[in-house]
Amino acid sequence: MRRNDGLYRLIKSLNRSEKRFFKIWSARHVIGGQNKYISLFDAIDKQRVYNEDAILKKFAGEKFVRRLSVAKAYLYDLILRSMNAYHAQNSVAAELRELLGNIQFLTEKGIHDQALKLVFKARKQAEQHELISFLPEIFRLHKRILEVQQYRDQSEQDLRRLLEEGNDIFQQLSSVNQHWWLFARLYRHAGKLGVARQAGVAPDAPNVPREVMAHPLLQEDAPLPTSYEAQLLRLRTLSTYYFLTRDLPNCYDHSKQLTDLLESRPEMLQQEPVIYVSAVNNLLNMTFLLSKDHERAHYLSMLRQMMNDKALEKNDSLQLRLFQAYFYHQMNQHIHEHTYLQGIATVRAMQEQLDNWGDRIDPSGESMLCFYGFSLAFIGEDHPYAYKLLQRLLAIPRAKLRQDIYLFAHLLEPLAAYELKQPETLQNALLNCYRFLYKKGAGSGFALEDTFLSFIKKLSKNTFAQPEEAWQYLQTEFSNIQNNPQEARAFAYFNFPVWLAAKRSGQSMSDLLAANP
Image (tube, rainbow, N blue to C red; front, top):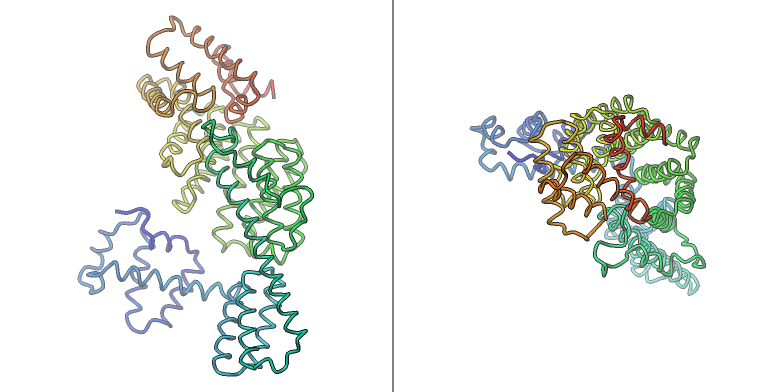
C-alpha cells in the first residue's frame, strides 16, 4: 500500500471537468483497449488511499494486470497528453508551442512565405505576453528561413537590425536568469531556516541575505531591468530580504510595488495568478505587522473573492495557494484580535479543507497552518485539540519543514502535554524535547533552546523542590532572553512569558494577552 503512488496522485489532482475530458479524449485517441484504461482510472480514483493489492484483486484475470506497472505508466502518459490538449486552448504558451511546430512544418515543406507570417505572429505574441524564453527559438527559425531564401529580400540594415534585436533578447534572458538566481538563493535560505535567525546556525556559515543584497543588480544606483519578469524577480527578492531582516517599512514598500506591478498588467496576471497570491500574502503580513487594518481587510477580501471566482476554480494550484494564504491570515487575525473561540471554529474549518487536499498540499504549508491552528486552540484553552494539531505537525518529516517551525514544535510539545494533565504524556513529551535538543547541541541556536534543555535536566534531577521554583527559574531566563533583541524574536512564534505568567497567576493566556496587547 503506497500512499504517494505517482499515478494515484495525478488522478486525485484532477478536477471534475478534467476527468470528464480525459475519458472523452482517451476514447477518441486510443485505438482498442481504451475501456480498460478508463476502468483502471475509475478504480484508482475511487480509492481514498492508494492500494495496489485491491487493484490487482479487482482486475484479476485481465491481461493488462500481469504487467500492471506498464499499464499504469501508459495511463499516466495518456492523462498528461489529454491535459495538454485540454489546457492548450487557455494557454498562450501552448499556442506558441503549436505555432513553432507549424513554422517548422511549413519550413520543411518549403512554404516559406507562410512560415514567415507565423514567425511574425509568434514573435508578436511572445513579446506582448513577455514570454521571452520563446524568442530565441523564434529568431532561430526566422534566420533559418532567411538563409534558405538566400537573404534575397534582406538589406544589410535588415540583417543588422535582426542581429541587434537578437542581442537584446539574450541580454534580457541573462538579466532574468541573474535575478532568478538571487531570488532562488534567498528564497531557499528563507524556506530552510525561517525568519527568527537568518545569520546561519554555525558562526562561520555564509550570510546568504547579506551576500544576495550586495549583488550589483540590487544596488540603488543599478539600472532597473527592462523585462517584466526580471522586474518581478527583483521586487520579490528585495521584499523577501527586508522581511528576513525585519525592516518592515521597506518590506511593505517593496511588497506594495510588487502587487501594484502585477495589477498593472492584468493580461500577465492571468498567466501567473499564483505569484499574485504569494505577493498579496506577503503584503498582508506587512499590513498586519504595521497595523494597516484597512489595507489588510481589503486584501483579505480580495483573497476571498478569488476563492469564490468560478473562472479560477479549475486551477488547483491556485486554489491550494489561496486556501493556505486565506486561512493563515484568518487565523492570524483572530490571534491579533483575541477572538480565540471564533478562531478555533476557523481552525476546524481549515482542518476539514486540509484533509480534503490530502497529500497535494506541500508539507511546509501544512506545517504553518497546523502551527497557527495550534496557537489559537492552545490560547483558547482547547488543549486536546491543540495537542492533536501539534502531533500532526511533528509527524511531517523533518527534512520537509522549516527549521524554525520544527524547533518550536518540539519546544511547545511539553507545554501542550502539561496542559492535558496526563503524567505519562508529559513524560514522553519532555523526553522527546530533550532528545531533540540534545542531538541539536546546546549553544547551536536560540538561548531559548538552552533554557529548555537546562530546565528539563533540572526537572529530571528533581532540582526544584516546589513547582514555584521551576516557574521562577523560567521567568528569570525568559527575562534575560527578552532583553536581547536578537533572541527576543523567538517569542514572536509563541509568547512563552505570557504562558508562564498565566501559570503563576492562575489566569488564562487569552485574558492576559487581551489585557496587554
